[in-house]
Structure formats: C-alpha cells, structure tokens
Amino acid sequence: MLIALEQQTGKTVRDCFSYVAGTSTGSDLCALIQAGVPMTTALTFYTGEDAKKVFSPQDLVLAWADRLLHGYIYDPHKLAACLEAALGTNASWTINDCPTGVLIIACDAGGHPWFFCKDNGKNSGVTGACSLVDAVVASSAAPTYFNFWPVVVGKQTLQMADGGTAGFANPVYRMAIEMFEYDSFDPSTTQIISLGTGYYAPPSVMPAPKGLVATIGFATSTLVDSAEDLADQDAARVYPACSFQKFNPSLPSSIDEADLASVPVLLKIGQAAAAQMDWKGILGL
Image (cartoon, helix red, strand yellow):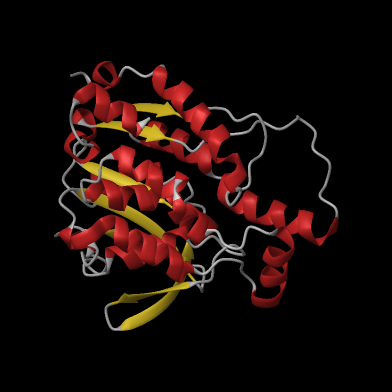
C-alpha cells in the first residue's frame, strides 16, 4: 500500500505525512520511512535475504527446541544488523534526529509501556535521545519469538519487548494522544490514515486451544490482536474532529508472524488492496 502511495504521488512516504507511528513490524517501517528509504526497497526487507537471516531457524523442530530452552526462537541482534544496513548512514540516529514526528511503542520487562517520541516542551522529554534502532528492535521483539532487547533511557538500561504486549499493537490511538495532547497538532486540521497488517475473521465459535503449543500460540496472538480494533474506534470517538480512515485487508487464514512461506500470499493480498487505493483522493491532493 505504501509502494502505491509513492507511485501515485511521486513522493516518498516521509514527504506525505507529518507524523508516523508503529508497533512491532510497523516500527521497522517507521524507521525506514524516516530515513527516506523507498518503499520498493523496504519491501525487500521482508521478501529478500534479510528476512531469512532474521527468522532463522525456520525448521519447526529447532525453533521449538530454542523456544522451550531459551524462551525465544530468534536472535534480535540479526534484526538489528539488518535494520542498520537498511538505514545506512542514518543507523546512528536518535529519535530526536528523525525529520518528522514519530512514535514507536515498546514495553519493558516490568510491563510498563514506553512511547518513543521526539522531545518537546509538552512531553516528558526522556525518549528523544534514545537510539532509533534500539527502540525499533525492542518494539519488534515479540515475546517467545525474540529475546528482550536493551534500550538505554537516560541513565538506566531497560530490557524491552514488543509494544503489543502492553496492548498497543495498533498505535493509532496513542499516536493521536501524543499528537494532540503532547504536541502541537490540531485535530480539526489533521488527517489520520491507519494501515493494518491484515486481519483474519475466525468462525464465531472457536474451540479452546489444546496442549502447550496451541496455548502459547493463543496467548501470544491474543496479546497482539485483542486491542487492535478498539484503538481505531477509540481514536475516532475521542477525536471526532479529526479525519480518520482505516485500511486493513482480510486474510484467508490465521498466519503466524514468522511464517516466511506465507510471504508470497501476503504480498498478493497487499498488492490487491493497493490496487484499490486512490492515494491522491485519500490525501486530497
């Protein structure tokens, strides 16, 4: 969908928006957007060799052995290395170095959510000096998939994980709070576009999970998914003066976030959704 935006407008995503927010994989996109990376290049971050490096091992036996032994499967250092390579000379940026507004959400080991934003006179002013890469890797560190990631905040180093574990898998409502309460944006002159990673509508009556593997899968996916729809509804209800549009394609089945074999399926779904989007009309250009 973001590739379609750049193709239709002739601009980078960064030049189309004054503020971007993301949790988990959305935070990776935020960093690439801030660095001005073309979205055709950003796509290779998911479809190329980087994805294979990050999500290794793919063998289910080895993966579950690591998960049971260590509590996680994948090494977040590999994600950090791939992200640094994609950002190039901008890999050393702090949150404050980002050229436009940004929100990245993570959660520390004590269960406290952290909202990484640029420092200003209205907010706490404690996250702007944090490393952009560290904030993104922490936000992407989904429990049982990745190990916790250390982030230096002020004088303390905190072990952090995916912001979805704190109920912020969809960051749009928190972004609205940061923009309108802790920054200078005016709801009446602001347009918010919410892009989802796709949703699967299960049967109305689902059987209870059986066994350790199924129960862990249920718990981790529920942590991420449970508050997503509510975030969109809350943003629209609390800030009715703000123009709000949501785009989130439906999925044919539940797809595990580390299932690389499903990437071609997701790509086709995304391309079909993008083909229906008139970005100039959406943005009023």
